[in-house]
Amino acid sequence: MVAIDINCDMGESFGNYTMGRDAEVMPYITSANVAGGFHAGDPHVIRETVALAEEHDVGIGIHPGLPDMMGFGRRTMDATPEEVRDYVVYQLGALTAFAEWSSLDVQHVKPHGAMYSMLSESEDHARAVIEAVLAVDPDLIYLATDMNIYEITREYDNLDAVFEGYVDLDYRSDRTLIVEKEKAAPDPELVADRFVSIAQRGEVETVDGTVIDVPADSICIHGDTPNAVEVLETIHQRLEEEDIELMRLDEQMV
Image (cartoon, rainbow, N blue to C red; front, side, top):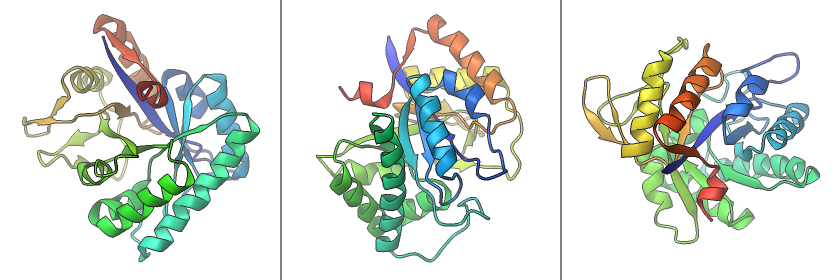
């Protein structure tokens, strides 16, 4: 039997605006990436998301973004390594306080949107964030969203890091993802096939038919995909058939 984590970006509602289907999605996942209030989320939503995760025994991690709520953290900003480091520490602190209120531990860190692109393209930015995470809590797991960041994390002997795969998005042969401006509903059976392929063989087929290595211990499902619940239900139906066990990141690291 193989074990793998399912993570999902959560807590991205704020004020009067609702994003995603957190309550419907949470029962199907094992790790929640909670928005820290910069690209999305607010204090009330953070608290509610932590409580929802606790109810379903889901591990929580900070999903830090750039301070750009209007652009949902997806627009490029001119920020120094030190500024990005501080953005991550600030948002990690917010989630940690709400987690402690519920007697929970923060499990992981997964950068969001344009921030993760910045870390992927700049080794100085990536190292600034990694070293800050280690200084704040060396038990945190770094969820690496692409191979450039993952290779840097592997240089730190005292950092637990895992690579993340995607199944509701298409890969190019260079292992980059195709992200459409408007999310369409993917074929749940195709997504489930990809999930099994990554979980069992660490590989997935790209849009041009090439098979690439995706050595993932966690797979991301986007909660704001129109048919996210149907996709997750289809994946869960395949778990027992394929001898795959869902396991939180912190349980994998024991």
